[in-house]
Image (cartoon, rainbow, N blue to C red; front, top):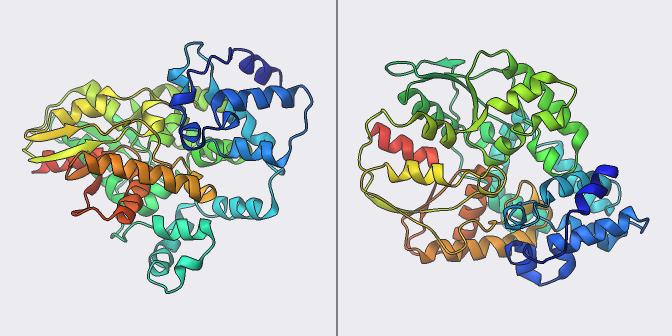
Length: 403
């Protein structure tokens, strides 16, 4: 509590965070802004009761971190919301607690997620699905198309001269639904001169749990990842999931008793960081199309990675990259947010889809699978003609490198 008090005391309530906050944009409600939530937390620290409406204001926060770079006083709202969420556990209504328990019994476990691939796709075809509870309807709508799963070997050798040895985090939802993106990441890294090491038994990195306030689960999962990568003999630990990368870089704070965790955090990199640092050596084939780039929140706000993806895309011949209005405003995905706050997430997703369609781009590009799911669902609702293709950044790089 002492740390939380010190964090809240840095806020001078200037209001610069208000226009950056998606929930304040939606509702114009002071208590649904970072400044308002910090004020509520101050009251709680002074002994005010944690009531249902107060819990609701904190739960409505996406954790998108857009307020952090907007704050002139350097308030660490990212730390504030992460340290506040565990206080909310047990104070929610029973249906919400059961929903969250179900999510965390499923999503962080790759085998369970893989088993759900078929049922989720089948659910989209069932009649009467529009009468499902909002969270189940959202899960059904977000389910991605089924693709053949790609099994990656334990090591992929660099093409040409070896420039680096990197480890690849394959994650939980990523390995179940986006193994093709991990495969594209491995191919691109290998073509750019990297040996790619893929340790077995990685599991979830803990990001979903950490960002939802389940710190004990997050620490258990993080310790397993640390064990897998600490002695893997790699120069960098690469992820192609923005939320995962954001937490990996905080492993030293999450696991202060394990010096290996800080070493893992120091080597954690987003794939676009690694590729930008190495510089291009592989030949790029032309990709004649126009794409709109969406900044994933935990990439742009959490890791401050904005230039590198654009730099890499700009290096693809005949590719035109455009930015939508408010390109770094949250799409509404935000970890499990679009499942536990489906109405707000849908409104944010629809706004994002409208801005992206207005660019006239043939494809939408983002660096986070959650964003890809959320934007795809919003585009299906909007039904533009034609519906733009939605791709991960490395998928487009993979196309350019392989021709």
